[in-house]
Amino acid sequence: MKKQTMFKGTLFLVAICWGGGFPITKIALDSGMAPNAIMAVRFLIASLLIFIFLFAKKTKITKADAKLGLFAGLILGTAFSLQTIGLKYTTPSKNAFITGAYVIFVPFLLWMMTKVRPKAIVYISSFICFVGIGFLSLDGELSIKYGDLLTLVSAFFFALQIAVIGANIGNRDPIVINGFQMLSGGLLTLILNICFENFSVVTVKMTTVQIAAVGFLIIFNTLFAYLVQTIAQKYVASSTAALILSTEILFGALTSVLFMGEHITIKAIIGGILIFIAVVLSESDYNFDKIFGRKMKE
Image 1 (cartoon, one colour):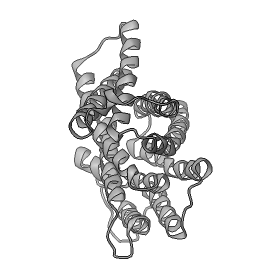
Image 2 (cartoon, one colour):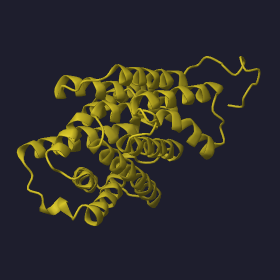
Image 3 (cartoon, helix red, strand yellow):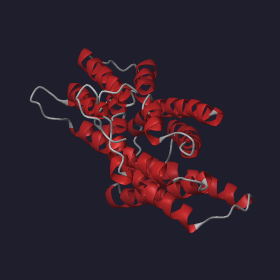
């Protein structure tokens, strides 16, 4: 129980790092770096540092750990690629709020993997969440903006990564898994950079601002954050971890306002509040199943 409480606390630190990562990534994008170049550098350097540590400690690497890490990394690389491209076409706060919708997807994905049906409140939360996304993203013609749509799709892949790790972590080595996760995520985004961004990862001359931004993302948002997340999910349920991590939407909006001077509209505030309410309700212990007169299997 003490370990569970401790790791719940460390997951909040991860959420703070991720929240701060939204404006930091936007700074890197605005300075001219391509989305997949940012992710490739971020993940590959992180994986290199992790493997140096593993080899120094002579850690045993199993095929099961490597396979789980490689698979989770492909999902994670896809999520970050979509999210970062989406950030080019939307604001950091909207990117943060819509990304937070991943907490709604997690119970449904776990249902598919573990056959445990979500509580009734999850359905209510999902509806509220998508209303909130509508407030954030729909324009006067009721069409969703390109950047917001990419961000929403990325939220699904973030949820899938959390569900896959949570359903399979067991007694496996989280550091080994994280190393392979960073490796496959980095290779995927490197391939995307080669195919769609003219291999800019090797041609760009990084400025001091870009080095500082990517350095922050490597140390805090990648090495620290994903190592802690992977370890914590050995002790904290996936749905609970998703709820705690989703507080990044608040930290993302706050840092965007404080450090980038972003102006958030009333419509965006309403949308953000609705998404946050949905996130909290999705993990509520209140038994709404009785209200609807049907006891669901849990």
